Image (cartoon, rainbow, N blue to C red; front, side):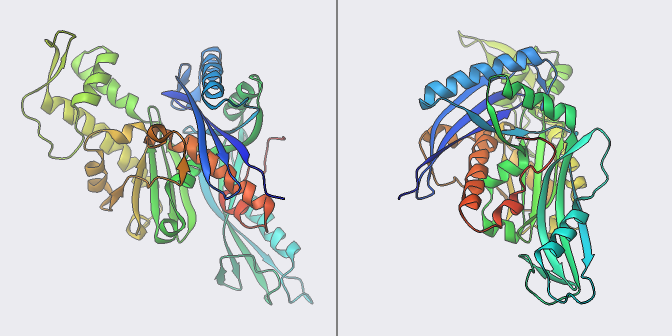
Length: 403
């Protein structure tokens, strides 16, 4: 019997937008985007909910739009979460085989996993992802489980993502009140990486930076495995606010000026004035271009340097495939040149995944995370149908939420 198609839905509740992407995974593993529902976010700041009723209304509106666009009644979603409270750490668990047991058994590896997952976190935090990085047997690295091999000491490396439980639960509560079921909760940059990075890029070393309205998320892959991840609570809205404070412009006009006239590139042309015109073509706002570009560059450079500071020592020099930029703020003119100055590595926009459907929408880097959730879901679906292995590489939510 031919395998039936499967519908998955990715949900991102961001600072700038609330977005649902409905995707169909076909029998040949091709993905078709059936529809996107999007509304401007309210009640969300720096990726976290601060006005529940406003955020809930936005989700309800985006859900209705997604169902209309896709002609699908959405029943469950994969939810992306972010915020400065979410952290990624690495930990290794070591287990010595008992005397008289020279061959590694599944329970030996599981003991090492349990030890690796036992990371001290703040009392109000919960675990989001335990992602298997590598295995070691008597000091020799293994890409897969060493079950069945002779050895004395088994070690397992994990990348563990954790965050404040109540803040994550607020998003979950809102989803269930729609009412929708929750397929899984995914840290945003991990979802984005599923869309933005291929296997070869991960092997060679790649950094994904997703800069949105209120946050900058990042995930670093070296040697094919995740090495660092996190969130900095700064995004494009902070750039706009800086322009507002320096120039005295209304926030909406500062945003328009940033998008239409701003340039973040080092050494960008800063002569003359940047202008906004009214409906008749007359100058409505006029700001010195040197001032505008300097404000933009300083804030974005500071943000990128914060990302670099959070990476392990020597990690940037190990990035061979380059740095991949997504998120709405990554569209800022000159941003790629600025990123190259900060990191000294090739800068790219992610290649499009093998998707069909709404071409004009999924080419936009603003949708990278929501579409990445569809890819994440596809990996989980493949894992359920085949031998184990992939699930531990993306890291399902084992704790603490029940289904």
